[in-house]
Every structure is written in structure tokens, then in C-alpha cells.
Length: 226
Image (cartoon, rainbow, N blue to C red):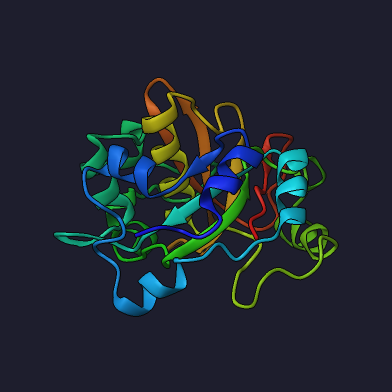
């Protein structure tokens, strides 16, 4: 299947793309083959313009194709890690938390065991937007609103599984750890009424934690998508 505009996008973004070829190398299956006919038709053409590529290059964005399933089932965060032979910091399976909140593991969180990434093409910043850092959740939302509208149905914040998909597949294919010293605060709620953040992607893997909306610190921001 030929994706209309993909070659031009790849050239314009200097290869900052996770397309069908890159995903097949990372995940071990043809990502287009697992899509429904409707999904395949939707991803057959890139929903962006030449002007979008100019902005994407200036903003340090990458172009990502996401798929919600593998040949053997839903591609959740946990199944993604299995496919990639790991990827998360082992601590996320032993208990994570902060201050006086109860610890939990991602193995019992719906955002890691049930959620999947909707099929489609997205442009995503590879690093948190500076204006969103060191702000509580609602203030971050206000900053995101100033960026203007995205395509219908595309939230500015990624979900936890979307961050994991983009970050771990990029590392597998490119050998580069995105979010190495930062965190991307997602729209995925945790069982203790926080919102999942993924980051500090070191040699041991990608970290996952959840913060209440009042938390703020300098490396906790948002990587907007469109």
C-alpha cells in the first residue's frame, strides 16, 4: 500500500518519521495489515499540508503512524512492551507513587492493560513544550488552548499508550531516547485519581507515574500533538 505524501513528508522532516516501514522493523509485523478496511482507507493519505511540514520542522515534531492492534490482539502498553522485548523501567511493575499516596503498578492500571492508540497519522513534539513546564495540569491545559484547534477528535495531550507507542518505537528504530530527562503529562487517568506521566527514559527503561493536577515541576510538561 502506497501512502500518498509520505515520501515528501519524510524528506521535509529529515526522516523524523515512524511510518509503516519503521513500525514493521520495531514491532515485527506489517502495521497496515492489521487495520480494518476503514482504518486502512483513513491512513492512506497524510492529513497534513506542506505548511504543516514547515511548522513541524521548526517545532521539532515527528510524524507518527499509530495502530491499535497486533496480529495477536490489542496493542496495549503491556503488549507493546512484550513486542519490543521490554522498554519500561522495572519499577513500574513493582510499585510507583509519591508523597503519601498509595503505590500501584502499571499491571493494574486500565491505561496500561486496556487502552490502545487509535489508528491514524499524528504530528507530535519530541520534547515538552517549554511553556507547559512547571505548571499544574489546568494551567497546562490553558497553554495548550493557545495553540489553536487541532483536527476534529484529536486531543492536544497524548494518552499514556500513545506516549509509550511513540517513545518506545522511536527508541527501537532510531536508537534515541525521547523524554530522557523530562516527563510528558498525559490525559490518561490513574486509579488514584491522578494523571499518568511518562518520562525519565534512561538505560533502565521508560518511567511511568501519576500525579494529581496540583503538582508542578520544571521537567513535567506536555508534548502536544496535532
